[in-house]
Length: 185
Image 1 (tube, one colour):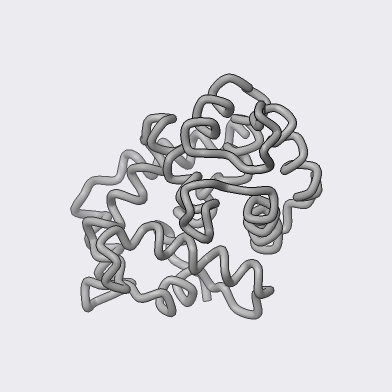
Image 2 (spheres, helix red, strand yellow):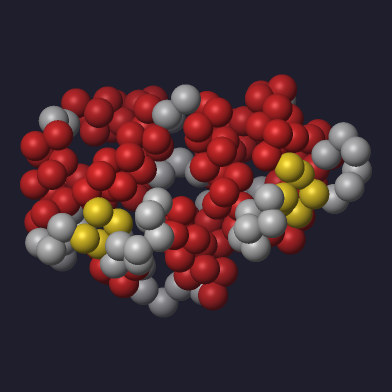
């Protein structure tokens, strides 16, 4: 885990000019489409869940909804993931998890996202079902089977083990390192 810290420190030390050059090298038009993002990250042959997750990440970062990630959105996303306040990160996670956009996350939505993340990262130490079960046992105090933004943020912040699970699952360091260092070959 200490290794991640030094990589993040290196990424944070990059100046804006360097980030801009990296962005423009990957996308000379100044805009990244969903297809280009998948190509940059070398994501091919993904499961349907993993593909859906990458789509959801893209659309969450595409803040103006125009179908492209521009440099400002790119820097905002990188900055959020690396330096964002915990409330900002939890809001972003919630938006990502709320696949149907109804303002609540349910067990199926969480399980789908966590399965997709594991399909991409190949980290299967704990099953998505177990992760969802832990989160809902601790956070869903009303036992309604769904979480509002407020319940999710307050519940996650009140349970360090939930925060650890979310930090580990949502760690985008490998993705950022691919962008910063470039995909080999």
